[in-house]
Length: 474
Image (cartoon, rainbow, N blue to C red):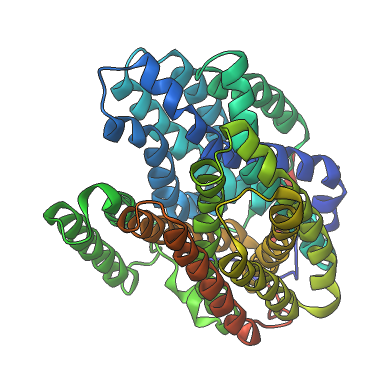
């Protein structure tokens, strides 16, 4: 892997070509991709009515396959974005995402819908790290944390508003609408991106190890399938154990190849940086808390309090707003004080919300007195912690590795999230969805958030000097 080292950052030209427009385009695409993670959850009942011949297990893969493929391809996609060019990979990934959204809406059967969702997840995997890489490249070095904050605000809003938006679309139309909504947005973003995004051209680098990339994606996918299906199969089921074992073996092979290949699929040298390694660990532990929390909140208000899907979506919306505000403020705080205190503050707020939830939840609905302030507190912590962790990771990698560095960190978050959802499913199944089982889930969220806080002291205030050559063209 060769990089020409001469200058401290992308030249001013890189940042003079409408950085606001580039950040807006990348954020809009990211919003749509993360929205799709949650918006499809509420479509399952409507899918059951349209495909009564298919089992709920098969239909659940319409939701699960997107996350599995997305997480499995993040790391290879980030590497390719840094080598082939972030603009090209971003536009290609988003074009694939938009096209497969239309294919999802037109799917005449569940197997074809699952296949289209898998391709949609692949498109998102190529788009997201390239999008954040573009955001970081167009922002001035001293403003990168603020740019990450703005970008992070869109992910918070998307994840939390998905259930409400999905419910409204299905009530007005049917399940196909949650996919069709992506098409006009996608076409508009692609048109704007082709015209306004700068093309960052870095020093020559080798294409990553093809075999290693395939093994990495396959191994990650198998481990994620094992985690995703524990609720159906059980932790000790042969299918769970085989998927986990084979996936782990493939990942071990990839790890071994990184020691000898000149352009490895997995850039393990990034973990030699203490701050980046700590950010990756924090991302994984925090992902466990975040994914379990978001799903548990919806399941609790619908299963215990009897809210409809639309009401549940509206109930979590205030938290989405404070999450977005917290993300923006966190970006500014990172610029002044570094990521460590920001991550600590966000994780502490999240842990406090989890502990409050364990102590305060009851069977009688209490939105104004309990759920609203709880959501506002948790949302603020989530927004602050997300941006702090992201900023710590990107601050520890040089510009020519922005996409790969963020992708590897996000992969850790997705794996943590898959484990969190698996633990949630296990606890709720064992407790038959009782109030006690939900207390256990929220307790795990609080504990994971507290562990995230412990990672904060290892996060560096700023990264080491960056030495790369880059040029920007249109």
